[in-house]
Amino acid sequence: MTVTLPIADVTHSPLLASKPKRIVAVGDSLVYGYGDPEGGGWVERLRRRWLQPETPGHAVYNLGVRGDGVKLVAQRLDSEFRYRGELRNRLPDVVMLSVGVNDSARVGKPDGRPYTDEACFQAEIAALLDQAQDLGPVLFVGMTPVWAGHMPFAEVLYYSHRDQYRYKEMTRRACQQRQIPYLDVFDLWLGRGEIWWRSRLSGDGLHPNVQGYRSLVEDISQWSAFQALV
Image (cartoon, rainbow, N blue to C red; front, side, top):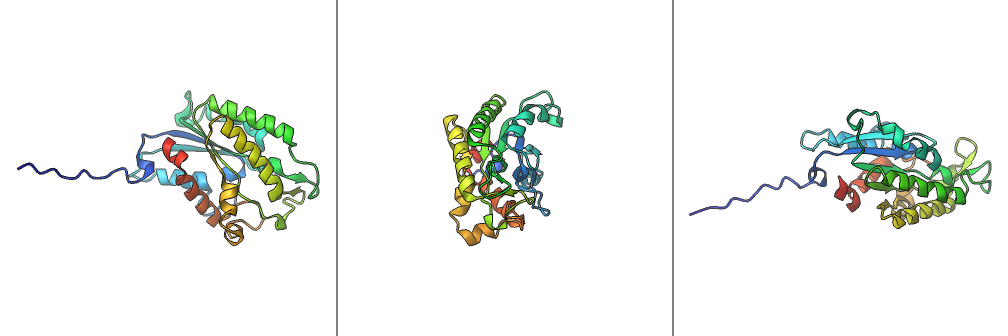
């Protein structure tokens, strides 16, 4: 009699279901991981997961720069990874973008001029997304909500949910037009309640704290578009 033994399930995690990838994460302080002295932010937390022996060894490059807006990210997108280790002389397998919150700030006072006016932002985000798609598959991680009661940031920048919403919607629509998956972190976090999202922001009211980055990396990891690509 022939006995058929069950095949062990070695793909229980989406991180084990694909071959190693070369991933670049490009953006502002949310990519850089500012506010997370424990884990270094969501990009670094992913990198550490992929260093575990049982995972396929994705290589992720953190190209986040604090204070960057869309225009500055676009200026450095292509050149920054061209000469980096395993990415040298090849395109990345996945480009992860996260930028826009700095563009949404108002300068000097709560109703001051926008850091980046809406017309410029629309043109610049469109150009950035087109540029990124020329390099490979793109995922966009949206901005986290701010705590306006702690403004101004750096004594001059005022952030608000009202302005954030407009800029994230411009970004979301631009991604939708290009069939780029967009993770709407702003709406996702606000939907969990004020006590929840406030507890995940640093004292500056702008950056996630350790708990915030823990939540963010889980949101990204559970995102179906992310699982499909990595």
